Image (cartoon, rainbow, N blue to C red; front, top):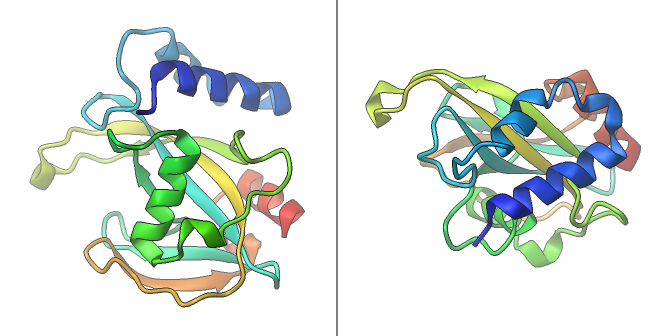
Amino acid sequence: MTSHAEIRDTVARYLARFPEEAEPLARLTEALDGSGDLASRSTIPPHVTCGAAVVNDRGQVLMLHRRALDPWLLPGGHIEQHDASLVGAALRELEEETSIPWQQAVSPPALDTTPLDIDVHEIPANPAKGEPAHWHADLRYAFWSRDTDVRLQLEEVTAFAWRDPGDLHTVRLTGKVAAYA
């Protein structure tokens, strides 16, 4: 099971690699000093999610159109109790949402245990799920994969596309993904 200590160690490795991001991640590092279980979806306001920035051999990134919130995003989602690691959670979400087996996703050197990006963002209230507004710290891991048969988890995702990294929703993520494309 993913632990608070693993999250803390992962964020520390990330900030050692990207020290200029300490300020945008201040809410996350402050939350790590608290006693809440950031790996649990029920921890409100903050909890950690994991995503997969998958780049194909043409330098395109896999993006999914989600039912919730309606944007084009990377594959990813909440950590489950049975996830053995954070990167394992990202790979599980990739396989659940796209049917791309984890064996077909290869991490670039130096990014097998450290995320490519961490994004802290607001999530609006979801009365249907009884969730108040809160925020996520999304740990995004980089993977290379050849184009493969993508079959979507239609309960959560309506479409997929291999897109240019410039279509990603933050300039910082675009630059990081483009460097590995």
